[in-house]
Length: 219
Image (cartoon, rainbow, N blue to C red; front, top):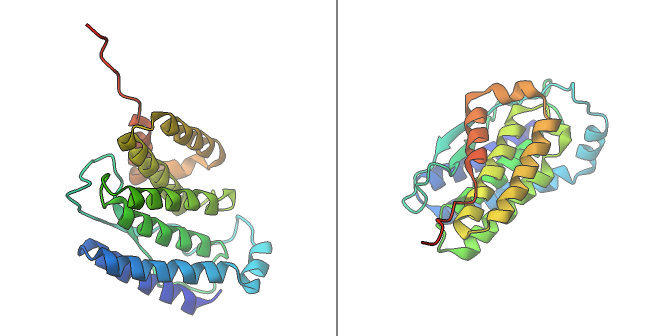
């Protein structure tokens, strides 16, 4: 496991999150985009592929949890929108790292990048579309190999929730049902003990509250 990679990824990500919290979207996008590119290159390396092939779910992980920081935004003050950016741990120990950690690292950075676009408000259609694409990319990246990690579960729930938020604001209520289908699959394939955390429980309830509004009957 390349310890220097995790240190550099954490540094760039955390600087990007700091810029986001301070309202500097341009700098945040630049830093987070660099980190996404770096993590994707690492995932594609022959060394990572070899390590992943020999990895099992019993492998210990340095990234089972992470800290979050709230991003305030006047354009997106809806409490149903999960707008907590992810700060990465940088104290990675080679002896306890799992090859799967890099996938969660990459997903966390992509999530932060998606937040930058999402908070730009419903009037910015291009930014919202970009956010949805990034949320969807995370769902594909975090397959069942990381189903035993609560950090991965939290990311998946946050993506399902935030895609539902965008679809609700766009009036795409049928697409929200598709998200509930993803949630159903997640509930069936994830260790139930991982759902016990307070933040996970809050996200789970948030996703379930998204539904098509009732239309009043004509007089």
